[in-house]
Amino acid sequence: MGLTRPHKPTNGFSPRWVFLFCIASFFLGIFVVDRFWAVPDPVQTDEDASLDKVQSKTSHPIVNCEKKASSFQADILSQVSQTHDVIMTLDKTISSLEVQLAAARASKADNDEGSPMVTEPGAKILKERPKVFFVMGIITAFSSRKRRDSIRETWMPQGEELRKLEVEKGIIIRFVIGHSATPGGVLDRAVDAEEAQHKDFLRLNHVEGYHELSSKTQIYFSTAVAKWDADFFIKVDDDVHINLGMVGSTLARHRSKPRVYIGCMKSGPVLAQSGVKYHEPEYWKFGEEGNKYFRHATGQIYAISKDLATYISVNRPILHKYANEDVSLGSWFIGLDVEHIDDRSLCCGTPLDCEWKAQAGNPCAASFDWSCSGICKSVERMEEVHQRCGEGDEAIWHTSF
Image (tube, rainbow, N blue to C red; front, side, top):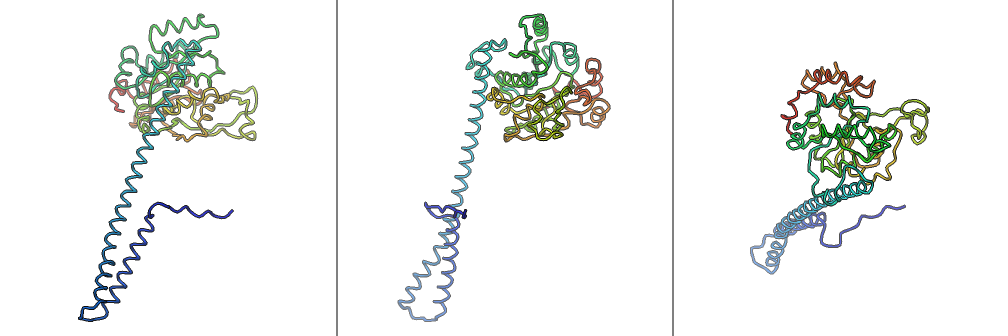
C-alpha cells in the first residue's frame, strides 16, 4: 500500500502557511527596498512614488502577519483548552451516569432476588446513597465468629466509634457474608443475632461456600457500589491486621485517578495437577504447563476505584470466574485501561517485619503471614500483632485524607 498524503485544511490558512507567507513578505521587502534605495536620485519621479507604495506594502504586512499569526495561535490554544474542558466534563458526566446505572441495576437485581439488604426502589436508593471515602468489606464466613471478635477487639472501631468513623472520615467497614443453603436456619439466625449486637454486617444475596469466593466478590462489589458512592472499595480477609490511617493515606495518593487497582501484585504458577490446593481446572487457557498467571493483586487485601467496582456491577453476568478469587478479579481488568499499583505496605509480615517498619516511622497498612495466607492462628495472635505493629488507636482520628 502507498502512503496516504495528509489531509490539508480547506478552511483558512494553517499556521505553517501563515508563517511561510510572513517570511516571504519579509524577504521580499528587503529585496525591494535594497534594490530601489541603491539608486540615488534626488528628483521625485513616478518611480519614487511607486517605491513609496511598494515600501508601504512591504512593511505593513510584516506587522499584520505577526498579529494575525499570534491571534491565530491564541485562538487555537483557546479552542483546544475549551475542547479539553468539554471532553473532561463529558467524561465525568458519563462516568457518573454509569455509576448510577450500575447502582440501579444492582438494586433492581437484588430486589428481584429477594435480597435482605435492599428494600427500596433503585431510584430512591440512588438519591440516598451517601458519598464516602472508602468502603472496606471484610470477607468472613459462618464459622469465623472468633476471627471477627479478634478484629473488633483490635483494629476495627465499634459502636459509636464506628458510626463516628463513617460521619467524620467517610470510612465504612463491614463484615461481608451471605446466607446458608437453608435460609433462616441456625447459621443465619446466629449472624442475625450478631448483627443486632454489633451492627457491622453487610449481608449479600449469596449462598456461602469456599468454592464460591469469586462469585461472592462480584456480589460484594455490586452490592457496595449500589449502597455507597465511594471513591474506593476494599476487599480484605478476616485474618489480616489493618492500620486504617495508613490505608487511608495510601488511597488518598491515588484519589484523582479514574481506574486504579491497588495491592501487592504477584504472578504465581498455574497449577495443572488436580487434587492440589489452588488447582486451576482451566490451566490450559494460560498456555503450556508451568506458565504463570498474569499480574494480579494478592487476595488478602486489595482496593479498586469506583469506576472498576461499577464495571464489575454492570458486567457481572458475563465476567468469567476462575478457581481462585484473586485471579478472577485480575482477569476482569487485564484488558482494560487500568493502572496496576504495586504497594508493598499492603503485605507486610507479622513481627518482626511490621514491628521494625513501625519503629522506623513507616507503619504498614496491612500485615499477614504469607505461609498461612493470613495471620497464622489469627484469633490468638491478632492482639499481639496489633500491639507490636499497630499505628496507634488514635492515628485514624488524626490523619487527614
